[in-house]
Length: 153
Ligand code: RB5
Image (cartoon, rainbow, N blue to C red; front, side, top):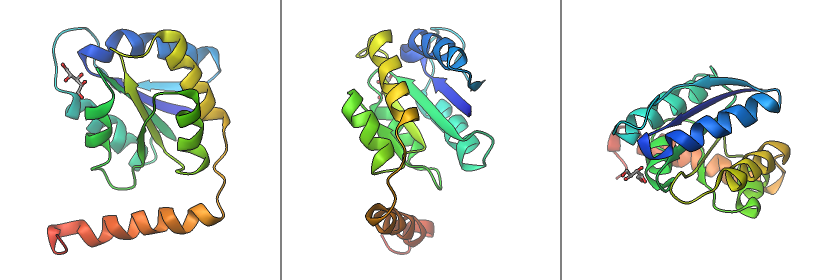
């Protein structure tokens, strides 16, 4: 699978670790930065990864900031993105099983490399369940469409 990955300075070291793990698992990695611990602004990297996934340049994406919160807020502004902030193997599995999340986010200041790797594995290996969840994801898509242009807000 082709997976886009991005981080800010607070997620940089964990991104490098997760990137190695993805390659070990046999995935193709599109690293969209940042490339050092120099301070940067996380929305720029959320945009790069979310747009790569939205345009189909990558099948899925992973975003890491200090907590994962800012990355999830920013990535979910991009059309077609379902970014899930995960904090356990259970939430990583459910992000796929019920929400068909095409991006996961987590925190470089929270998760250890072992935890992050376990989340990534759980999310990638768990299939989307479909069925009753399709109508819920469809409603999210409808909400996205309704909010376009701000007419409905
Ligand atoms: C950067 O200090 C920090 O705010 C950022 O990495 C992230 O945690 C925001 O949600």
